[in-house]
Length: 130
Length: 130
DNA sequence: CTTGCTCCTGTAGTCACTACAGGTTTTATA
DNA sequence: TATAAAACCTGTAGTGACTACAGGAGCAAG
Image (tube, rainbow over all chains, first blue to last red; front, side):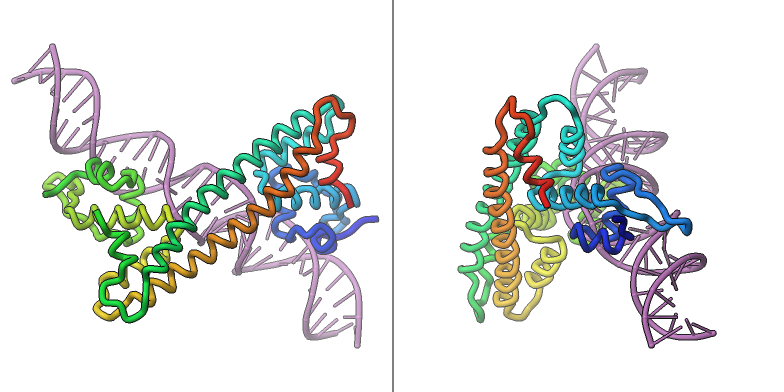
């Protein structure tokens, strides 16, 4: 079965604009075209789009996703390399969480110090302090 | 006391390029200039730069920081508005943490399923599954 | 046969910087 | 004092991963 880009978008969860972007970036292969020049997608490309979507949801960069796709097509045992990319991304995610938690703690304290009707805002004072 | 941009950068923790960027964006006022056209910073502007730096570290957007700076110069009681901007950012930060934790959980499971020497990588299989 | 939807290409914008290129001025050293 | 090195200047382009048009062509339903 073949589908036009709108259906491919629906089936993969990737927006039409983003599908075209992925094509430009060489993440998905160039699809077939109708006589009038419209893109036509097969089931395999739609699977790939869904894969990319899931990877993005997991925080993988486009560069990592390219590497994962390449590994998925390689003959040699790739599970180790895949795991390494995954572990690397997991660390990045954990670092981001740590950063954000630090932000959350500081922000919470600042916001709590802020009460309406106050004369000099303690939050601003804190942020402006030497 | 007045300082050239390099010293202002040191004292505020904001890079030279970023100081010039903040000036272009109207976040910091246009500084004075020497006869030769070099920027000269006073203590007040350096405080502002430090304020912006701290706000960025807390995850505030540039738009929010502009609003906070405006509130800090306004006559009327601004503590309530400041608190609202802070609370809003706190929510954004918490949403980001929630997203990342979801990522972390899913990633961890995928990476754990990946062992070297495996024939078909379970992580890739999972990500490609229907 | 016309209305409205889907699709096309190409370009520009988003956010918050960062990185030059190619020039001038100031400061430190010989 | 001469010169080399550092600091500064403007202006522009690049980053990541999209998103948002503008302006046009094709296609499907009533």
